[in-house]
Length: 129
Image (cartoon, rainbow, N blue to C red; front, side):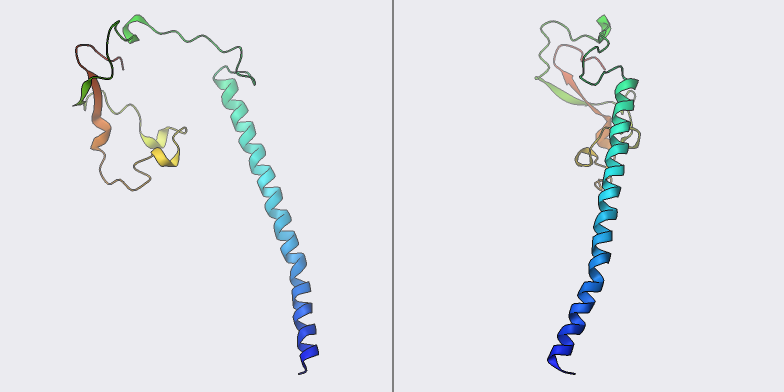
């Protein structure tokens, strides 16, 4: 086989791969557009669910009950961690769709789960749940 025919064979193989590569890129681009569109629709549905318009205006007012307010003069920066296995944890990682991968200890391989039962207790005042 001469060098010219070998080069011609390689050129034909490369040319035959070109449409496959082109179609693959096209399929990936369409898939990306579809997924982005689905994500955008889900975001709009969540906004409607929580009463937010597209610009973040016209939100419903947040009402904080007196028993949920922090006491006047309470220094939340001074305190200690206390064990609370009665009212904690508030939720499980799997049930919260807003947690990003970096903040999910369980998904990142942490073997224990006792860390979920600690809460911050400021000195001399109560921190509302």
